[in-house]
Image 1: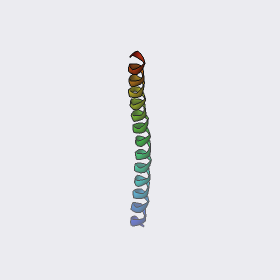
Image 2: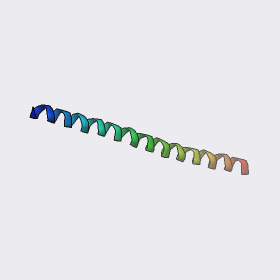
Image 3: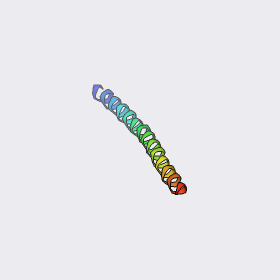
Image 4: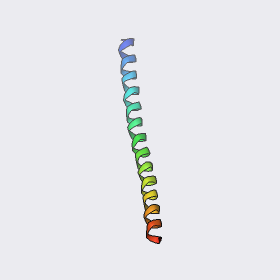
Length: 50
């Protein structure tokens, strides 16, 4: 019975870690996309000024 409780606890911890990884991946991708968009805007703005 103790082993089953440990298994359930580990499953829960693993699921939570997976959710955390998914959320962090979303945050990372949004930040990366914002940086790329900013760079493109600067490049286009520089080209328009020429």
